[in-house]
Length: 189
Image (cartoon, rainbow, N blue to C red):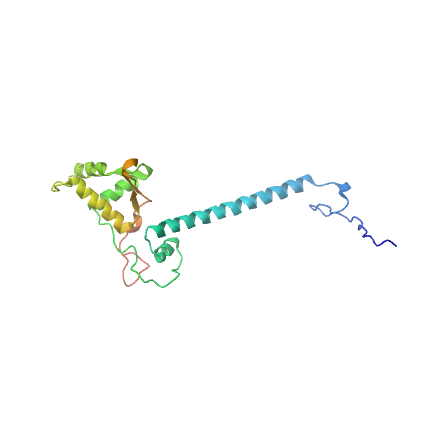
């Protein structure tokens, strides 16, 4: 008797299964194509999930670099804070309706990727009858936009070489909401 391994006899192949031995029975092309489609669909799902996760991580790093505290980032993502809050919440301040800051915030929201220059802000505010008592309207607008940027950290300015335009990361809806009451902090007043 030979000590060599003997190949087992080929058994019946189940539906949708490729035979391990006895390839003379052939491969089912329909089942193979379905397996390929399923595998590719699964890969695309994994890729898109990983891409979303990486984009979220990049946003968190960007916000952290701009000085936003981690409990505020966790709150924005809908997660509980990792550590007990040692700082005041980021959003106790609200945009007062009818103020110059509200008009500037509206301009930033509507401009989107185009951005807004300070000269355009001066023209818009003067057309609305604002800044009539200001000695230097451009300086007043500059103070307004930098105050909005300081309080929200939600807008930024490109360099003078790029046109010195102001941009917002999105809408200022968080700062427009009514302050939360002390009785029920989850509901708006």
